[in-house]
Image 1 (cartoon, rainbow, N blue to C red):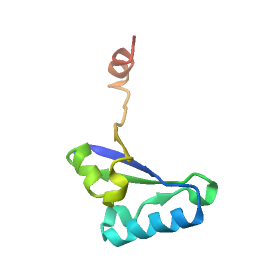
Image 2: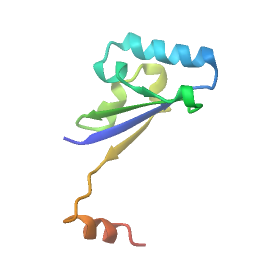
Image 3: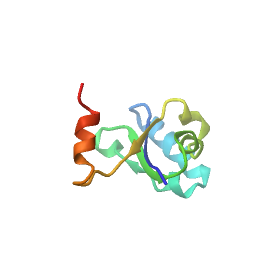
Image 4: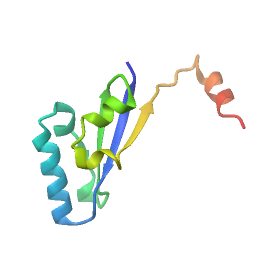
Length: 92
């Protein structure tokens, strides 16, 4: 199953941080309530790693107000056998 990193930004203010965290908490989704937050280090974003079927499905776990601006990145592991394929894939 594909793995995704979801990145969700919010404004740099105490109120925005609190509202974002509250919105995530209220979803009740295990994925969302276990997000990692960077606010205390000045990076006003949350990150979530999930295994789901698609990018579209990944966005649906987010509170609706955060879906349109969320970044969903498909992740891949690279082992020694696939390294040459990866290098060739990224050649200009």
